[in-house]
Length: 218
Image (cartoon, rainbow, N blue to C red; front, side, top):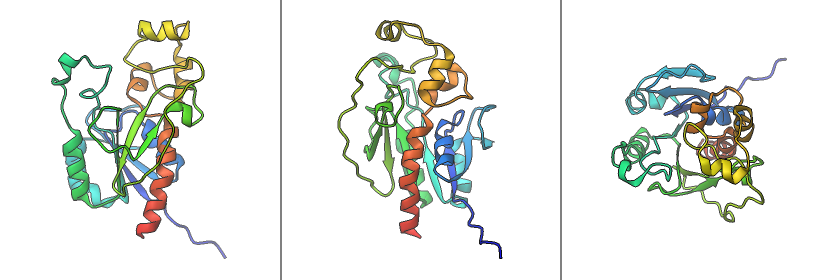
């Protein structure tokens, strides 16, 4: 007698980029579909090239959960203050659209973004030799206390689309693409894609909590 097949819960990965977040949710057990307004030839799962919030409004309820990573340049410390207003503020509209969709959701962004930090992730907490702190706000108001980010020795920071002089000075060397990929836990992206990516270890961690939230809601 064959066992009963339980389909994986479906997750919509908005503003997906080349799939760092999507891979983590895949590791956590989700069937992932990505949406981005730009073509993403390296995205490793089903992909739709469309405006993320337009797609969410039309198809969001076809999924069990939604992750969204709206552009972070408006809040990033890597963006000069004088230029921040030039970048769109999509965090609030994204949150509003997710709440209207009525499915469990996660929003990711950078420290300094106007959001509730239910989870904070950095490489030093998740086994990566990487300095890259990210915040995650959740529809179920998850709560987790962690000590401050702490690195015992210089580690890679993936910022911008080159290697800033302060990164080279901090490390004492100029990282190669292979070292950047190893630090992020990503082996399929180019340097520009890595600069925008979420390490899969982060969303694998958050995704396991999302799975439990879905079980509670079921």
